[in-house]
Length: 63
View 1 (tube, rainbow, N blue to C red):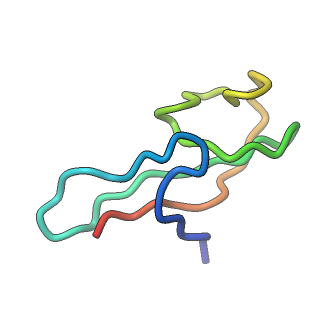
View 2 (cartoon, rainbow, N blue to C red):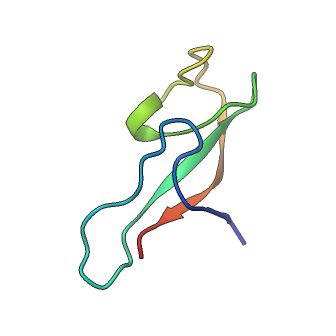
């Protein structure tokens, strides 16, 4: 089971849209420095060290 976050641990982004919920985005963890981030604040690279070496850490779901 994936870890559920209330918001992105890096940029505080929350899902938007979806009248009945079900909107979510993935949170990644950099394997090099440990920073957690979403696609919004990091794209495909860690916003801290610019590494592309990452794993899926969990998801942020809308309510």
